[in-house]
Image 1 (cartoon, rainbow, N blue to C red):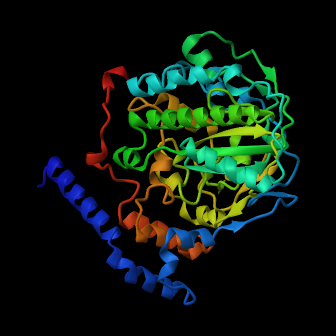
Image 2 (image 1 turned 90 degrees about the horizontal axis):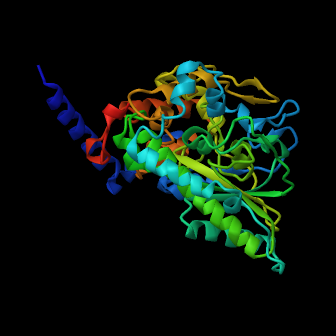
Image 3 (image 1 turned 180 degrees about the vertical axis):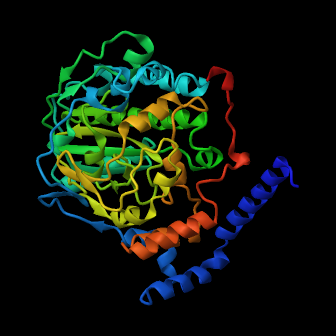
Length: 431
């Protein structure tokens, strides 16, 4: 009988062989044959990432829809204090969650270090301010939009988009920054500030959480919270810098990031063309990054040209895949094929309570990113095979979605832990 160590070595050998195979340029012919079977009009060029881009439909702003999310009634603005971790901190999800929410990120030394840095960009002075008195003339909003995107990329954003700010994305009230409540005790959850924001545009920024680290993680071990905090902090720094730059140009701008929000990001991300709503609930999935990212935003009155929402077939894909639901350790994700009505729009309704309870109470790690780990859109190296799979999924075919999920399972994606990528230290005694 093989020892556990030998089984691990055999699995690592398989994973290494798989990666070598998937990255072989000579395998392009096989991918082209696959496409020929699926659609005779397409050639081998269809497997490239550029070709996937051609499968992304740019949508207009249509009444009754936000991208591919259907709106069936008035969407009420919500208070920041009524979301996930704030509800846990207020005792709505039980005593264990209330206790653990104050320590689930800081209990890992790296996650705690990164998280503590967020307090420095959480102040009002960091996120907003008065614009310069002299205003730069903007004769061409389209050129200014391209400039802002290139500036965000220069600041190390992985993706950036511009949208019209949906009014219902704004919170009714802003709660004090969670780090000040949880880690410093210098603010109370009862200190709510009304949100008054009339900016017409929103600039959204995505930062990748790091593919190799995710491949080395279980999805809910010690690095999970650190990955999240790293991307939150980075996207927040970019947003604060970009907002300050826009104010220097003479226009009003406010940064929104994980330590100081005035809005819920999902509708803003959809409006800016950075993805579609996924089965995981409020997670917006990007066609290249999946939801292996964290986001921040800048609202502004700088004249810009919005990108508008996109459609790359995610709703049809998520209806058939269900891989995140199958692997969710808390059982929080819906298995239903059809979306249901939720607060005025259609979505897959999941249990915020179950998800939050597991993430803050996870004794084997800090937080959880298991759905991100297993999602076929998130867990891919750069290869012809993955470009082919993403292209097939973007055809909006239920059959293609099922095929991609089955092939994903066959190659072991989402369930592997690649030891060579495990660079971080674990501290189980702190759990």
